[in-house]
Amino acid sequence: MEIGHAVFLVAGALAGGIVSGLTGFGTAITALGIWVYAIPPVDASSLSIICSVVSQAQNLHLIWRHIDWKRVLYFVIPGLLGVPLGTFLLPHIDPRLFKLGLGCFLVIYPAYVLTGMRQIETAKGGKTADGAVGFVSGVLGGLTGLSGVLPVVWTDIRGWSKEQKRSVVQFFNMAILSFALVSHAVSGLLTRQVAIEVLIVLPATIGGSWFGAFVYRRLADRGYQRAVMILLLISGATLVWTAW
Image (cartoon, rainbow, N blue to C red):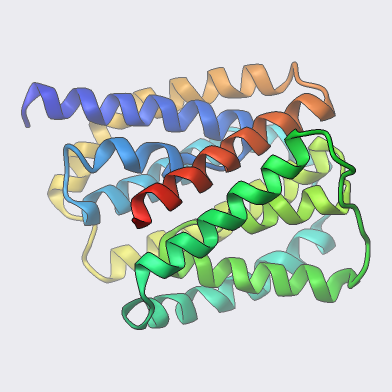
């Protein structure tokens, strides 16, 4: 592998690790845009899943005692059911329109929150609504790997604390992406080349994730919310930009 390509891989892994350590999600959103300049998209997808799982497992101790297992499973079980549907729908959906629609949503909601307008908070729908969000997020995971974006928005709407939000988002992402990793392995996508790339990026992922977690522990609820909303806003803008 050329030195230039290795630099892109390490830079993406470091950025993705920091974001994941800080927020509990976002490795793919952050790293893929850098990695596609160095490696094929299929390899980049497998690499993002592996780095996401490693980063989230590394920081599991941050949320372990805050996990409400009943609440989390209402998201995870429907989400796992949604992943195969998303994979099935992948060849039948116009990627440009999909990215444009999701990107606009991810611009509007964070902008609404960050501008200081009255925050939307509701407990309506209960566990049924939580399960529906989990299912749709699983479908999104199968389609694009963006399984975490809807749970992030939904837990914010629920008005939960940063620990409650992160426990749901991080564990949900970890479960969905672990399932996706098994799917990639069964499909033969985890090649020797991917293994070499993993050896290159893992130190940066682990180091970046540690630094992100260090910052997370020093953020109050409002600071954590702002960090997450800024990331969602950037992600939405990127999706809209690449859809044109």
